Length: 323
Length: 59
Picture (cartoon, rainbow over the protein chains, first blue to last red):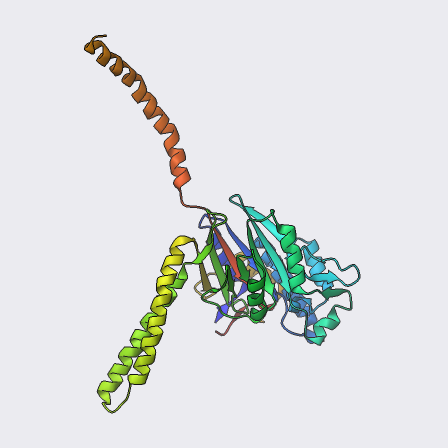
């Protein structure tokens, strides 16, 4: 079993207690799952309000609106924003005025470095979600909205991180076509991304789903302007090489037990893969040494983390005992 | 000027300069170390697709 809001709060507190600045962000689809039966609406909204309350207590810096967050209409989100939840979205606009309903971005200055978080969502494709907007809101083209925000952020931010509920393919497209975004903290499908995907100078990650893991991105802020390099890349290539070595030894063992076994094609394939990986390793060692090294890990929210007492009591007060 | 006078002059300058040098080192060195200290590291904790889950799920 993995996950739980109270344990997630503990992970954040533990990291915050280590001394260096530590903040939390969410890329969307935080509050609701797909569509909800009318009978469940009360429970679903109670849970959503509780999550918003806990995230505010945890000092969340930005929450991007995801398409599923719209499934109970705009009123819930507007109420939470009015009560201090930092909801952002660059392309969720008022249907009449065509202006963003929530701030398109939020900027935090940490150790003299201005960090901007921009939010984007995909147009809802589930009819029930579209219906819940009651024609009051529209989702604009994410690329156009992003270009607009990037222009607005010129000279105002040293680092730009996109909180995206667009999905992996769109995130890769953005990384290809829009310069100046260092990280895309994505979502929508809820993939488990253990190694950041690099497209140009942008790194794309996701942190799985249902709150079972939290992504932890550790960024040195000492050299603004220098390119980021993934510290874990070398380790991952090394692990792949080790895996191929193990496979090779297993094949040799099988050959000893069964001399008629032809392992040559498999061994040849492994050798080719190893040659390719060794080249990648050499390249990685060169580039990683040159830039600012960041670290990305997916931390499991396991039972070894104690439950945060404050969040635990908030949950208990609702009387909800299971999801 | 005699050689002894010259040496004595140098000694006198050194007497004043060395303590001044030590004083300046004392003032500037901590700043120097601070400048060389490890850069501030920011940790960003990220979630997506929590989908309203309050409790743990089977992994």
